[in-house]
Length: 468
Image (cartoon, rainbow, N blue to C red):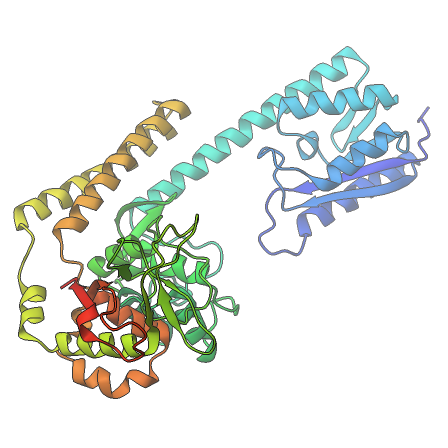
């Protein structure tokens, strides 16, 4: 005689819902409802986790809610399309069994048969099914990882998810409107313009992401430091070779962008800048940095005294006149023959640069080999991670050495354009102005005033140290 159940739970889950239409769970629910009706059982609640894997270990909200209801005695049976919809890890099965046993729920119905959790044979069958499901998931994951690696090694694009900005839907052809934007962003970022300034420009120009969203500084950083932009194929965060698509920016530009935008010392929480020379002025008495220190309506730089600033408190200078003087000096220097020679002279040794480039490429290839060995069970996860960490440390050291040997070239775009920049200086935002100044000037030492109380600028107090 069929047992009567008056508060049955139906559980449905699908691990990947590519369309978002929940077609898989809808089919599971329809079949489970039919089974409940055939048995004459009353369904009290349907619990659905869509697009969530049971093998990944991620929390399944509806599954947890069902367990809570079973624990509290609100459910007297469970119907599920197949046991692997409930669990793909043996540890989860044991938790489910303990919950049902404590609550007195022994009937778990699948469309392929009943599972009596109290009966030893039924429990054994459930454990076997869970073990099989776990092995199947692990094999599927490994096959998928292997296939993804093969695709990446061929240089072909990854087709899942939203299309990358700068490319058409085929992920290979350059987008005629977006690719030039990336080149412009790269040029301006290398020139020193801040990500905040660039994001503001994108907003003002009405340029959105490929998903129609507004640009943020973090999304711009990700875009400009993605090796895809200079024609490299990335797999699991590592460059593993040349891609099948043409680069939008050059590899040299890409590496410079990564060094500049991913520098750990780079601050990202600055408040709006009002002082063009912040961080570039040094006290001529004690050597500490000068800080912005307004006095009434006047902007000033000052050596501040106190436990935080630790300056001598003996140097003050008005900002407006100083900034005008420094800007004029920078623009004059941009047109000087000395700077042109400094920029164009080859300061690196080609052999050393070539050696470092080969070392970086070799370690990149070794990372791909490591991945292949791990996928083929030749390495444990611990061995893989340890070897990968050593390779990445060595790569970082080689990249730093490469950076030291190759010319920074931050000022290249400005060389010989001092007079032109002078004409349009007032049209540039402060971020752009600071970028031009920093490309040429390292710091300025401010000496004590020879005439106390003088409000004009005494050029003899200003000692610039040029970067180039």
